[in-house]
Amino acid sequence: MTKNKNLHGVHLSRRAALAAVAVSAAALFAFAAPAPSFAEDKSIKVGIMAGEEEDIWRVVASEAAKKGLKIETITFNDYTQPNEALERGELDANAFQHQPYLDNQIKQHGYHIVRVGYTGVWPIGLYTKKYKSVAEIPEGAVLGVPNDPSNEGRALRVLQSEGLIKLKDGTGILATVADVTDNPKKIEIKELDAGIVGRSIDDLDAGIVNTDWALKSGLSPAERIAQEPIADNPYRNFIAVKDENKEADWVKTLVSSYQNETVKAEFDKVYKGTGLSAY
Image (cartoon, rainbow, N blue to C red; front, top):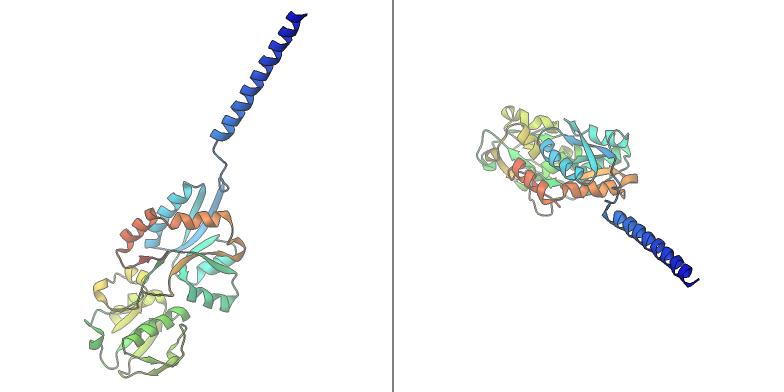
């Protein structure tokens, strides 16, 4: 009887040992197996401007892929389409604009789009192939400025800071030529599409050109005779998404895939100091 009892105890001990091994193995597997990524199969479309930004976003996409997020970039050649495409759901995000521009777009079109992470800032400048300084700009000169509301106001503020014009007191960042109250050199301000100003520089005495368009137009910093200040610049560009997605995990991954030293190094290489990281 004692022998059977001991045998029964041996069987119990073996079963307990096997059970313990099974539990340990399961626990080890659970610990060793990688946690499934929220974005394991997540793919998104991001609207960007064609050109230099494509080089930047190749690196962003590589960083995002390491975190399980696949980015497909959709390129545009003007500023009017990416927000419309985002609002319609043809894009998941875009990265090309600053807050004054988005504010104006929302006012005009009622978009449900919000900023989620800054990217870079490109100080807008006054370019010319004819003069070495602002002082050399003659009476009656023809100056080009971007014609979209936010960038036109931005351009006019540069002209005012250089003493070429004076704007009405209290004029905000959406100033237009109608707000010019003093024009001592009687300069003609020609409103053109943002992408056209730089390409028309040979036909102008000077023009206010966004830095990205200056690069696309083959203009160099040596041809820039004035520039807006960088400190407290309200024109930092950012990644934007639909309001309903602003707290999504993939959005956090998208922003962190841009805001890192690897992307910053590529940004500095591509823009050669004409643009600055803004986060």
